Length: 230
Image (tube, rainbow, N blue to C red):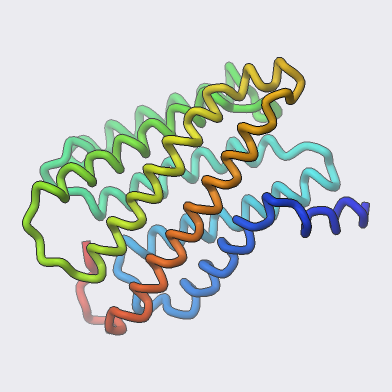
């Protein structure tokens, strides 16, 4: 068992986790400097860290961590939806019909876990659906931001960086999860897909860390009476 635990420290998949841990520590240290949208992103990062650590321990001690993937998919859907609700233009269809869109996708994700791909199975259908929705959020933000003549601020620059990281990671990861069922049927012959996903995740975590670092050290500390940024 200890050999398996020590092996985790030398695995390439540990690099994104290390970066994520640093980012979470940064968010805790500078929570008061983070505008509302960045605090929601920080909550997602804390949730991500909890699931990552839990999945590793579950894999070592129980040989099974797929239920946590189902939990992660739901959290990913809700937290990224709240993040983009704060950042998207009020005229965006995703803000005007937020409850209907998120509610419908959430119901489909839960139904998939209950009736189609149970919690002890790989939930590739639900994961793919959530990733497509997040990509649509990011594309909407990218196109609408380019059409607006907003003042260039550090907050806007950091949001653009994070949105770019979301597009890079989720577009690449979407292909991996869409191909996951075929990969399982081939007995792991396409392991390179998961290696690519790890690299994309590392890039995502590094960009998010840099963007949040810029916000934490270049924005003034928010007072309790300040209105939250949106």
